[in-house]
Amino acid sequence: MPRPPLLPSALTSSPRRTLLKAGGTLLLSVVAPLPASAAQILAVRVWPADDYTRVTLENDSDLKTEHFLVPDPPRLVVDIDGLDLNNTLKSLVAKVEPNDPYIKQVRVGQNRPRVVRLVFDLKEEIKPQVFTLAPVGTYKHRLIFDLYPVREADPIAALIAKGEWSPGDGTPTAVPAEPTPVQQPVPDPVGRIEAEIAAMNGTPPVAPPPSPGKSLIKPKPPVGNVVRMVTIALDPGHGGEDPGAIGATGTREKDIVLAVAKRLKTKLEALPNTRVMLTRDGDYFVPLGTRVEKARKVQADLFVSIHADAFTVPTARGSSVFVLSEKGATSTAARWLANDQNKADMIGGVNLARHDRQLASVLFDLSTTAQINDSLKLGKAVLGEIGGINRLHKAAVEQAGFAVLKAPDIPSILVETAFISNPEEEAKLKDDGYQDQLANAIAKGIKRYFSANPPMAKSRTT
Ligand SMILES: [Zn+2]
Image 1 (cartoon, protein in one colour):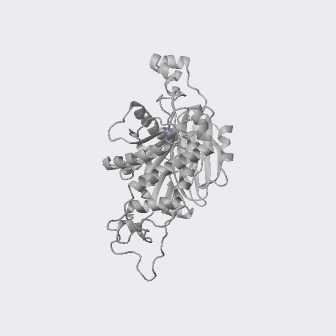
Image 2: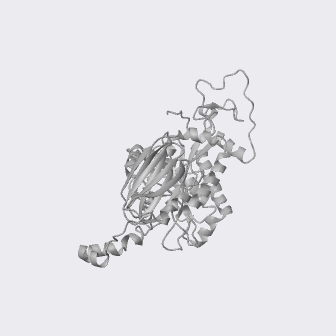
Image 3: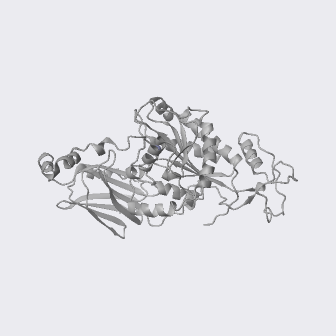
């Protein structure tokens, strides 16, 4: 994510805006007359994903639209006012891929003078969200069509269908006794996790098979003998319309962090009883509130957001780890960074009506002290490991008001892997070997956290 400046120059140096402020409407009409011609589509983009398909029409003014659904076969019809058909808009037809989850094809035509009609032929029924986004950053006005499936998939069922979810679902599962004395008086969760880590390192503890005919679950099983699946939510930042920070050679933060998250997923899933949910597994935009909501829906034990940093001067460098701050941020830079990170929804594009509902369900009264304490422990463990492979930007875990860290019941950290705006670190971030080292370091930090803070037994409540 980019550090300051907070406002891209495009937002502050518009000549028309300056004229309006300086001279009023007369000057505006003489010097910068508004175009009398129809609005122009400047760019069209399609972002297909399992979650939803987004179609973006970038244009030079705020467009008025009407839309309706037609059944049998399902179609979404959109009429856009004040628009003449141009080649850019026509190119939308070729931009829909045959494997798009929701759109079969798009047809575009001049329905009547100054009204363009788009017909989306659909693969299944959808509920559309059609909304506009005001200019931000390098983007002009955007008209957005988000095509959501009518039946919202159960996130766990969807992961199972993709073969990406190990069974367990919080149901306590008996495991063979550890090779520790049977008469051990206290449960030993730390020992169990240590044994699991030992197993990872190729020194598996000897586990006798359970005796047949004996109930595997005792009425009150000691914690040390009960293993439940640990669920880790990994959150690759940005995506889709929101590229995140961009390096001097064009490296996009959204691509790097997805690659690192996928490597980390593989490493974590090699641990016993560990499964991983990615908040996005492709190049599409996920609003900040939705990321947290997704983690809560799978009852994640940890939330790890992955980013790459950027600053106005190319010399800034090093990795950082952030946790939520209860009040304000620990440094001005952290506050800037939080503002910028939280701006992702403006850049990536959020339907505000829907966003409010999501925020309401996620960001309720935060009793955050316990969450922050756990997050600090996790953050320290991860920062310590990353310190072994990269210079640290700050020696300690930092705190800021990131929206994405606000799940009140999930220890959450945000890792700034390195500065993509630093040419040396940009090169590292693109490097397979370095991405692997990063993923290893974060995985080790997570293991270290769990060995000191073993997950408590919990049952699914939903
Ligand atoms: Zn970022």
